[in-house]
Length: 265
Length: 95
Image (cartoon, rainbow over all chains, first blue to last red; front, side, top):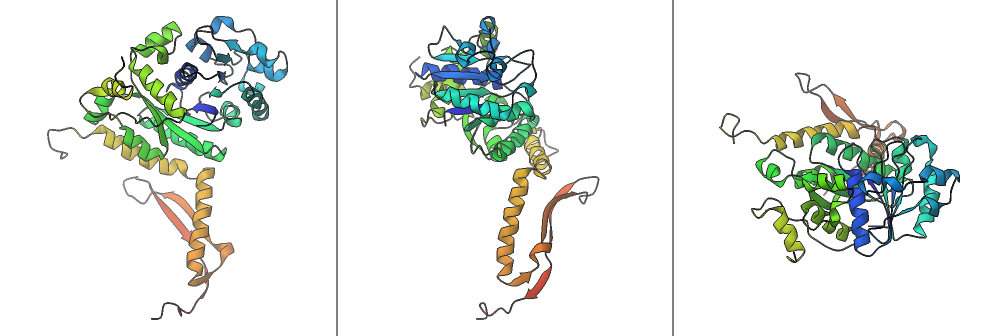
């Protein structure tokens, strides 16, 4: 995928912010210099998912309004060399920034970073327009559920209207056992309905709760199966041809992922 | 697995069918849908014009929802209005 990627979904609560954080950290683990941009002005959360909430002085709105320089607002992650966060403002609203201002901001960031990951707010209004303004590629996050897939379809339409053609799907919180029983939409169902290529499938994983409690994305956790799925997703983003595991076999998802990584754990 | 068998119907199949239907409605009127209709109009116009001269300005094509299914069920259909100006002589196909 291209270097400026917006992570979006339409529906709230499907894992946009968690996905943004994991992809960002994952790309840094692969040696890239990455900035995560939180565009959810008024409801910021990427800072807490990354465990950087106590380090915010300036934010995106300060940069756009010229209150500070871009470099002053960028928070450097001390655990991951090469990872930076540009936090959203918490006490302003989405109208504080315009799509044109976002484009300029993203162009400035492109000079410094290999990848720019933009965490998009829920909804299809101003916040969405801001988030997609400077993006070249998009990852649409969905869970295998009617309401979420429906909203994903709407978002895919809006992305194409915004002339973002490189759109990939990430199916989150997959339960292969339920899909096998016929009580959850399968990956094939979701792809058939949405007609968009798959960048990753993240299994439901209790470890995600632990990761969010700690403020440490699961992608850095070797024991987390969601983390392993995010690591595979990151490699696909970088252009590596890694097959998505077959989910309806007996040896389960974890075994599949282990195979993908050559069983080195 | 029949409806009266012991096995429950797969709820995922129902979910899939519901989604497919709701997306037909959702996509109606969106800009990408309108662009698709325009492309479809252009293609249909090109094909028909090989045989029949039609009034391009009055050519209408749209996807509409209607309550034709009975029992309150809504179905989607393509509605076309293509006024004919003149039918061409089928010289090419007279073998």
